[in-house]
Length: 444
Ligand code: FCB
Image 1 (cartoon, rainbow, N blue to C red):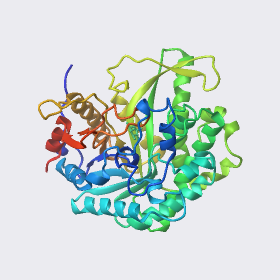
Image 2: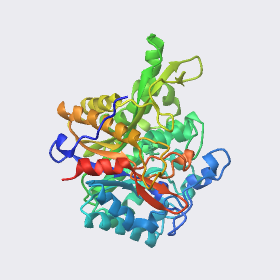
Image 3: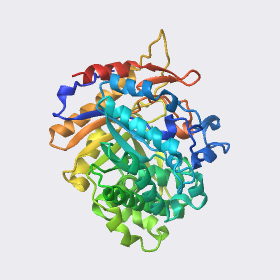
Image 4: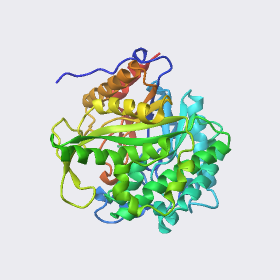
């Protein structure tokens, strides 16, 4: 196997930005600082949902290690840090009285980044829905959009004057389909009506939050979608149609709603009967103009047709090399999505790769972590980004998932996605070989 090296900063267009990402519940330590309960806490406490029933109560104790972690971002020569703000930390009841300690924390985070010359890229929601809102239907209840806009005003009323960019919702597909159709994430439902409703309400909440942030005078606002490449299992027309439909409800539904003010016909054939009444009238809000689009990209899936109920398909095994979590490594998919998003949806708006990375079973040996598979993975994906930039696609940045090992949702603390190794028993941080390789490539 040939191994790839991370291209130097100079190989990318002038002003191209590099960063690393995390999210609140995955690193902060949700059990401290006055945060309220979330649907992830109850989901994790239910046997069978999360490996070892692990939760985010302690995670990486990022709150207790803020300065150390910010210094590590700086030490990797990164330009941007993409973090998320926990709704339940800011508003423990989901609405009402803010938690002053929570707001203070995000204030310190943003100021700490700026003091180190790093651009703060905020995501408002990365999955920890306050439990009181989950209790009244969560993303199935249309009211979520207004509650979310209120949260946007509270948190951005505090830090919106200093963040470099903001996006309302991380990965609409995960918030809706993964969590309400596949049942793999909180609230762990498997119900098509709940799925269709949450898909639409996520889009609506996105638009309402963009409006709220515009109202505060903020700029550089975007949308972050996770895109997954669909490959037909064989050369039959049935397999091609199955892969196209997968692409429809996974990728084109959210990009279509937000950038083209329409949902794709193929996805609507199955979801239409379950959408809330009057959904067609919401596109003025959903399509509120944004300034950029973020793409989170990890893998592809092989799709096979079957005779089951809609969407009449299932995943088949693939044969490419896989990461620790079994995801095939398919870098070309990133180039394909940058091109398609630019041509079919964003038409000239800046694109950012807002997440890219892999899990590996990294261990410390002699004080070091030799994660050369991650260096190879990042290098191959950065090459695809460079290819897109060379073709004139306006991709402006590449952000690695993740800054450090953290709570990987239903997989618990086993998968390690970080540039930095975390020993969860001692909270010791050890930069991996990939961290050092990135720091060298990005040095000015
Ligand atoms: C993305 C999520 C992120 C992390 C990575 C591996 O879908 O945004 O929180 O779980 O996958």
